[in-house]
Length: 150
Image 1 (tube, rainbow, N blue to C red):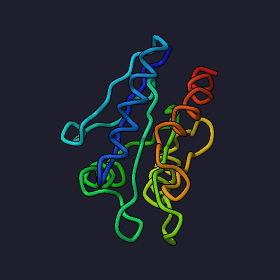
Image 2: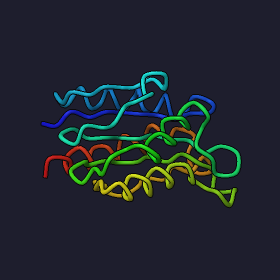
Image 3: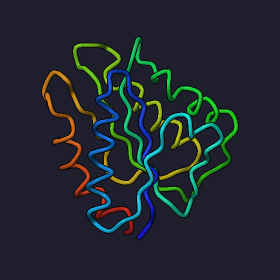
Image 4: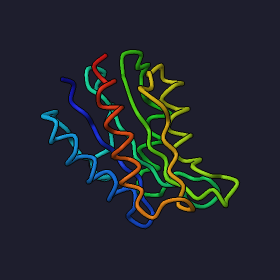
């Protein structure tokens, strides 16, 4: 089983709560998982023999949250080609804005540009439809977790 590196970008704490909930669910399957705090991401390049899961809120005009923006920019400017990396993205947003889930979409686009392969669908969680994003994310995770090793 591949290890999962779980990274979150949050504004008000929702993405962190979702990531912590998913960490617990991933561990319950017997899979190794590491939850990264933003200060531990300075030079982190996701290992290609492991899996990356990004949980990200959107802020401002579709921006990546400030706490995770330096890592996003570092990946954009310094990351090598990652053709063997498998990843997933859970994007949190509010569909009443034109920039709905834009930060998560930006991560998906960046990882694709780096040659990585998304496992499953990009999950967009709408704050207008659900007050418990972790419930939606947990349902998505059950499918995604089975697809990682295939």
